[in-house]
Figure 1 (cartoon, rainbow, N blue to C red):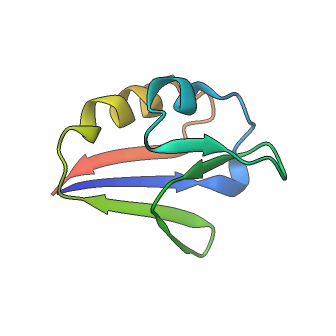
Figure 2 (figure 1 turned 90 degrees about the horizontal axis):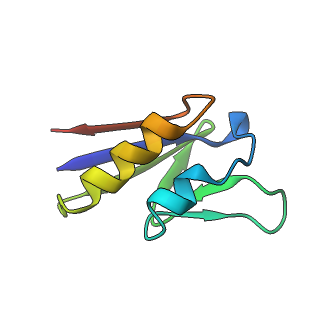
Length: 76
């Protein structure tokens, strides 16, 4: 299982995550911050749990590219 977490309130809206993983991230039209698609929000963290290991590589690239390091990706 792949677990992707986004700490949305610290997002600066650089758009790298959307460029590298467009199937998992979108930019909000309301506030210009990243949105982790199909995730659950709890206490400022959006978490996506997926059995689709294909998403790991793109999400990992997004996490590495994020200048404020608010994306984490792990497998469990």
